[in-house]
Amino acid sequence: MKRHTWIFAAILMLLPGAGTAQSIVTYHNSLTRHGHYTVPNLTLQAAGAMHLDPHFRTRIEGHIYAQPLYWRPDGKTPGRIIVATESNTVYALDAATGATIWKTKLAHPVSLSQLPCGNIDPDGITGTPVIDDSAGVLYLDALGQRKAGPRHLLYALSLSDGSILPNWPIDVQEELDKRGVTFSSSTQGERSALLLFNGNLYVNYGGNWGDCGSYNGTVIQLQVTPPRIVAHWATRANGGGIWAQGGMAGDGQSLYLTTGNTFGASSWSDGEAIVRLKPGLKHSEDSRDYFTPSNWKTLDNEDLDLGGTEALPLDVAVSGAKPAKRVIAFGKDGNAYLADRTNLGGVGGQIAIKAVSTGSIITAPAVLQTPSQTMVAFTSSGGSGCSGSNITMLNIAASGSSPIGVAWCAPFNGRGAPIFTTTADDANPIVWIVGAEGDNLLHGFDASSGKAVFTGGGVQMSGLHHFVTILVAGQHLYVAADSRVYAFAF
Image (cartoon, rainbow, N blue to C red; front, side, top):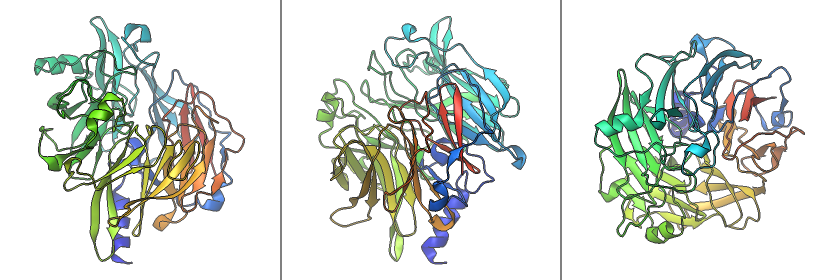
């Protein structure tokens, strides 16, 4: 093998879900949040035979916004699909049949009438949970109704039977109050995925839809045994919410997040930014640890959050040299922002900004890295030669006058978040996406050309919510919707 080939192969083997035997423990299948799954037999030709599995049937209570996860206890077959709902109900489903193995009801969810603003009713579990595979534990944030009012509650559940582990849940507002930190569960929303990194649990918060009241983009770091908050980071100005579905992403050393617009900031105060954090969550004003566009104040005033999507670390191939360390994010202004991961550059310190959409980009992108190229897929509403609602593919270069290039775009009607599948050695690359709140169909595109390889198979799903993304496990693609999970096989 060539040097870059075996390096990327080694990285792939370290990612959760590489191959069919691994659990899928976190949003978009890895710390990097790239959304890449290896499926040995899912070729471009086989994709055309995708169909709804008639043997998989489910019955679930509640709306679903979070991505399902997959847990395979002790390598047993079949594994379990883990589903969390806005009704604060968590399910473990047989991955082959959809039968309920266990079901756990947590604190009563919060009705929209009990919140100052929002667009989810009831509001319960929105952000994707995370699994500690070796311990067999599921961690999640649930907005629950308590006597004192709504509270963000952090739970740890045993994956063997769904029981709540001792000393959980943790009342986030109560624990931060003990640290002298102001935090209101009524105005702080949690729609980002949770993350486990180096034995610590990370949870991110923004606001509620409508930007009501006072809130800050907030990250908490918890040790899990015994459970307690050990560190905290927040934007210095009001606002600056962490909205992205993927929350934080990591490169193995640091964590990266994006923030939205702040309110009333006369000087830059952590909003509209890509921010690098390390365990301990120390606040840094070093320009190497953050990037914000030079027009951050305009973005603030016009509610054009840079933080529409998570900041994704990229290792862009360089011939005969080490990969270039980059990070990319997309904004509600329709721009793609590319920065140097070793030195984010501070105010206006980007490598490139490129207009890639005529409308807001607010759904999670996906990344496919090979020994020769880095490809990024996202949903768009036109721009860079693309018209109408579409899925767009970018090529990212390590250097040159145009480090962000548009490879292709294809018509697409919906708001889902894409993923990639490949067979071994990155062959047969396919972009999969669901037309949530559009045509409600499952779509597959050849990642190399944009040619459609699957157009729904006549299965129009119902109960899909915007930002829905796909779980890939074994020989199935799973899509979570209100009251059920769809399982597609090939």
